[in-house]
Length: 138
Image (cartoon, rainbow, N blue to C red; front, side):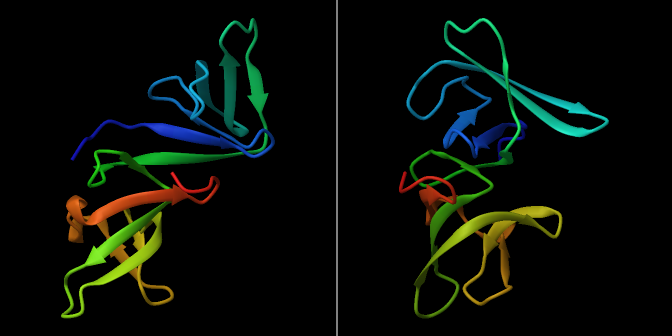
């Protein structure tokens, strides 16, 4: 498991995802992002390619990288929608669910309402990212 701490930010006003790791947005515009923790909470600032000043993102959702990659090598973040092939039962069912942080670890919402499957109980080769809660299919 990758132990690097990474974040991405969904700007609710601009409807755009910013990745801190590679300083690019999904549409490949170059970004510089700063996440500042202060006494008032979390402040996020972004600066686009060629722009002089940082813009404050006031309406956002901060999501952390889980440290895992899916079957295609794509990094899995909180808020991703994944397909998980549950091979623990005789029926080998496919669950489409959201990646969440619960009980001190990352995992997915289970097949039954309120249930939780920790990533420590799942093999990454059985997980495929199909989108996230903010954007359409990946």
